[in-house]
Length: 482
Image (tube, helix red, strand yellow):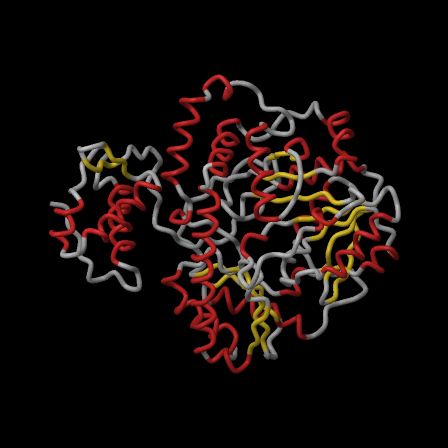
């Protein structure tokens, strides 16, 4: 008889801990495909728990595709064809390589960092492998003909339609599937927009901001200018003064400051865009699913009446950093031009992934996944904040924007420079970054002194079991004198 010790369940409920035990054995192959599981009654009696505990555990396993039931025969282990996920560990960021460089043959070494507060890695435990594998098998079985047809440049209709339904439900956006353009990552979509809007335009980005965006624009040889921010977001008067045509912003959750642009500033931006025919706003909404304090504000696209906003989002943050599926929503005035000038571009996301993701969204799995991950990340954040509050850092730090997505700002009262903080972090096997690193250095307006001692704390890739020691190492990095 299958049995488990339930003494070490920790804070988990009995059914959730039992579900995890069975799932772990299925993933590791201890319970092979086709293996019949004990009946609910006999299993409950053997474990010394109620029938409802086993019933709930089985129901959760079945909903995620780990087991299946046959009428009057019982429950059986599903055929899980994906590789078993390895135990998660934080890894240091690899040396950046340019596209097209030959991969370097390097010996695989142990992880450099005990905890990485810079990079966002998706842990194997976070991805719904069993559901994804089940849906992929269904797609291969049901759509073998469609899978062999090259996708249109904008993406398959089923995925674009599913994205429309998702955006209407969660972001209040009224759009058509035709407006949605699917691409392999936001970098690719940025490149398409440069071709669509013109290399002769002046592009503007936020300062501070996500540095990769600026690098993409510069790699295409366009004039890219840096616009400073205040507590409400990007400065509209500076946009006008620097004669920008296109502005790339993240108004629902700015990275790295966490600022949410209020409605008044949003309407200022829309008025700025409407003043000239050449002006457009690229609204990057990459992290809106993970704002914990309240529902995110309406998108700029949803309040734009002049067709000046291009909306961009990605599944790499909400689903997996290795699923390179992103999309943009073009206003009708740009849609005809896109298909007239750029329709010769081939689709960059495989049909297999597009059809699977469409079904994942349409059948409600994406919503369940987001809810589960939101609870998971909230737990990680709360544990991290609680450990900081109990540590010596509590007396010399202030935390801001802790509800803004998957990072927060840790402002430090310290005489150490940012470089010292980062170097000390490395000595203690922590990967740290400071807010000052996200500013463009040639900007005439430099950040104030307080921002020069602020850590940007990304926590999406932090293992919960490591949080206590990670904070202890952080204390050493900040408080220990050289």
